[in-house]
Image (cartoon, rainbow, N blue to C red; front, side, top):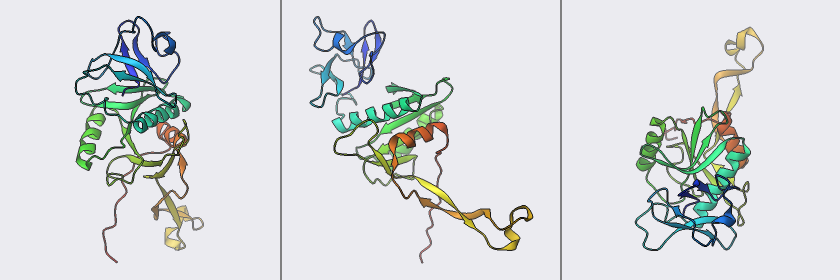
Length: 245
């Protein structure tokens, strides 16, 4: 079920912010009479505003809805989209949910304050093949939009596409999730050999001496998102050693 809706007069409404858009409040559309003119941005079917038992605001399709990719979204999926949007906004970027592009749709699209850069964030909790993800990643890159896939399970495609695994707490909040897989750091090795000295100085870190290793401590999702948007955390394909020892 979507977190955004198309209002006939106010345009796109986002249930994760206040006001929802064009000065429209949640109270103006939730259980309003007459009904607010809302439609799904994906399939065009009618929507109505709802509250989950936890108080999460979202939009639900009216009866007899056609097949729509947003209909089958779970509560966990919606909560993760909300966490990603919150982290993006905390980093000082704009976050738009459920944005359609050229052959793709982003769960959350981050746009830099100057509008020059964009990055998609995908909540991928359901199983999917590596080939499918590579195809979707390629389509986004063709539009100039890099993407990071986010899952809460250990999936075989982590490392094949820019992706992270997170750990979700029992009671999720905007910054509660932590990154537990998919990140690495290059650990520099100190070379004692004289021929590897840097610029004739004392032995020290040398280019080519080191290895990629996992990040030892789980990173807060908000910290990771901010680093990825700032460019201090970047996607990198780590070579896999296939030799048997």
